[in-house]
Length: 222
Image (cartoon, rainbow, N blue to C red):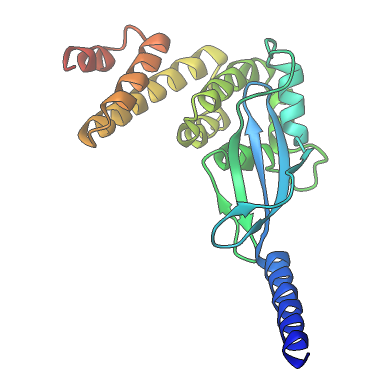
């Protein structure tokens, strides 16, 4: 009888400890972005720590920032209908550990950037003041996001925000910058032995900039 109670007590203690561990270390939360629809959503669920076995359904909720809503309404005219199917991770937090940001955060950080003392986020205000420039900027940003080239996005925002350029000049400068960045990235992928990735990047670059001389030279080196 005593052994039975000991076993029951031990089982209860183990269950309580396991529940506490899952409660504190097994909670997973994060956010993700769908560039096709220009929306963000948050998600959360519980898992068994260390082995990462999901034990509860995923809870999702839309939390698209105002700047993204503004952009897709005013400057992205060809958004697909229906529900987005391709989501890119923005950030992830497991338990009480710190948050890990993924590449998509390069874009979301800009969309969330605010003006001090201004009710509108910075890029809403900028787009309202520079509608012709915004019409150039945002389709480029969306295209880069769809290709998961978030690492290029801070450069494009900085160029757009530098001022003193008419829309035609802005388009030309951004095109030159992106073509040059593609050349560097393709070369890096080739040197790393990632030839399939390099070929895909080169194909994308040539679609956008078919007459760029450095890109053409990369074709001849294949």
